[in-house]
Image (tube, rainbow, N blue to C red):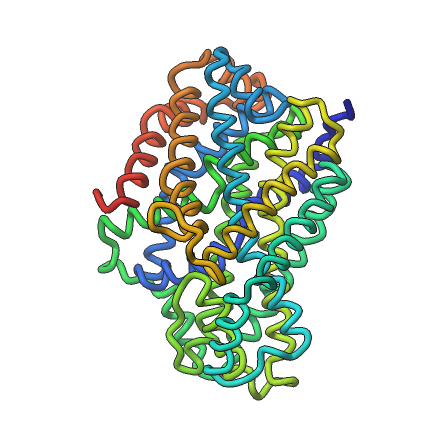
Length: 450
């Protein structure tokens, strides 16, 4: 069997792992949630939640993966009981399902990038809305774009960890940041953009309620890829001397910084033309094309370059996420079935392509593809976000906090005491008490119980 490979540099570790966390949610959810819930006040609450839940949760999954240097299922099983492999299996299944339906929206982004390049997104609001409805309801085109995105992901993963994932992450992440900064500058130069900046960043502590705290907790949980086995899988490619705590902090800061910059890109432009932005797919496929067409009408090309850059940004953000999700299952099949890496990659590609086609049809041409009264895409989202992800992260915290040998956890956390161990008691308290409690709160809040 081929060598597993590993990340060749510290910057490769940070960019690849941050890329797995930075996705479409950073652009279509975080800015809107921030603006609606007190601006900078929400950001402060969010950072508290990252400290309470995100960083300890990341460190835990890193410990499992780096210690075992193998796929997620075998990594959890190596902690002491074979039954714990279930947590790894759960993460692998979760990431595969997510990749299947995530590829649908990623495919839309890819199609919109080509449409922007071809100059097809210019027009009034009715034209933009009709364009999206016509495309999304087509029985063939969205499916083809979704499969195309899975195949692009396949090409990267098939090249391996160092030559594929790390190399592409080193290219895409700086490009993503550069494009984002350009778009932020362009947006903030518009007349009336100050109102958008204030909407995002002006602190309003009167809006900070219990629900806002729970929203911030949920954002911290879902934004950092907890529960998907991605962090565990990527950590299995870390070098033994990687500082897990420092890496977790840097990844969380990069993820949060990108999300805040996304808000500074969206809201100043939207407010400059009097459009109230929303969240979700409608923001990036309906609202923002209208914003760009109006706000940048005076720019060369009537915002043509802005639209092209924006959808390139979305494609890059989606791709760094899909690469990580694909790698989780690829590593499993490569090591458990002893298949050549290329063959293992094809298994994931075929499975995820089938899921993507069915999910695409369920929200487009064939809404009869449904489970429990929900379109298949919505059901997959419900199943993974509300059940599988919290379960995986919760079980990880219980295993690391209560069931495995404490000295083993300490050795991994401190790199066998080569790193100052003063934070270890804080980490153990967090992973034993705070993280499980936070995950339960996120779970209950999703169902309206809290």
